[in-house]
Length: 436
Image (cartoon, rainbow, N blue to C red; front, side, top):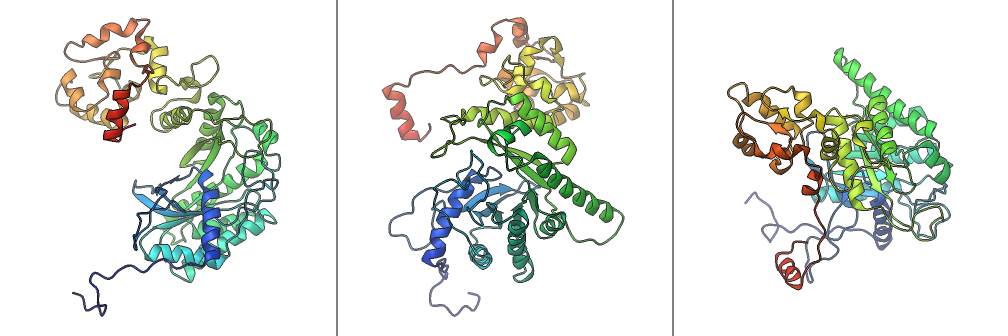
């Protein structure tokens, strides 16, 4: 025992205390924040009957990842879902009849501290609708972060959604208190914005990103020069764009992402599949795009950032969209068979990175291993490469029978998972195992 004076051991955690009013606001504003893809919501919908401690209700807590790969839990909420803009794809637009709520600064600070002290969260993700003006909204969000940092000495993670159109001074102030800033580009092209969100201007969005990048670069330069300068958004900046609200093809989406990475040094571009909303504009589609499209965009984004691919290389389909049947790297390999086979014992790193089924970590291991001996098929399998995809594209030191099919016109069909009707017995097995 450590000298505690409580009668029970171990002592029970205190229940989270919040008024009915705050609880109602939390329900509305945490639900409204779920459309932001910068971090994924989690939590089941129910709580065990009769429980007194702990809750799994999905109100406001989500998971995100720090630059070093750690997973952190965040309180993810909007400051308010009132918004003076009328973006047609947004449930919080001014013409929407959704229930409205607004937290005060003290309420957000109090909730964050209470959640943190109970070890529910490690930080705060705060976004907001635009109220009065971009400057006023940014001021209120900065006030929350500043109060947490100065009054409560809060050292946890803070992610603030920056408001395009806010002054440079307010953006600079936001970076002083937050670990990460993000400015949503919203839609893939300026034409899309003009069509569905005419009050949001591309120059304002890119100006905000440029201001943040300039401040981050300034901080790094001064730190490198040996000056002791206050941190500015040490986890960098990110953005999000909605996919499928307009007919813009994947090629233009990836070109926009590539431009943002190159010009504004973003850490991440998040892709969020459009979700139909009540009383939607007639120009919007009636249903969401297939989730696999969002998945393919994330795969292609990974290839842009870590595998040396260009956006124009990755889209080979006639409609300028990524293939939904196979992943973008395999689709590129199937369309460029003249590039293969690649000899894993001789090829440079850039060529190895283009082999389907071999990731960046495996490439690093291959480069080390082949300094000692020539790689064979068994060596690649030990590295846990996706051999079914890799087999047709590589030359090894021993015989590789899979290579014979490289020129087969029907090779793609081997990788496409054919849909099939589940039988009653399949459903019984999945019900027992829990697998979908």
